[in-house]
Length: 117
Image 1 (cartoon, rainbow, N blue to C red):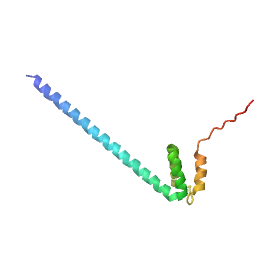
Image 2 (cartoon, helix red, strand yellow):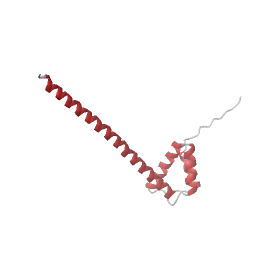
Image 3 (tube, rainbow, N blue to C red):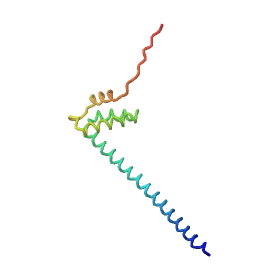
């Protein structure tokens, strides 16, 4: 009959482990939610900065770029937000300035010079 207390102890340990796992799962989802909320706040802040520093034409051009090349559009948005936060933008960026900025940030295009013999 000495096996009975061991069984009870084993059952207690199992319950404890299951409870820890449940808590960890709940904590993990809460952490993911807070990370999602932080990302949404950062996106909203970035959009506010873009509205403040870009004219309508510049914003339309940036949106067009983002539709065709999402990664590049996101990179440009981050660059504009960084410039604005560092205080390096005077006034607002218009469409011509946005075009120049896009050319600067665009990766170099490779050109091929083909010669016939």
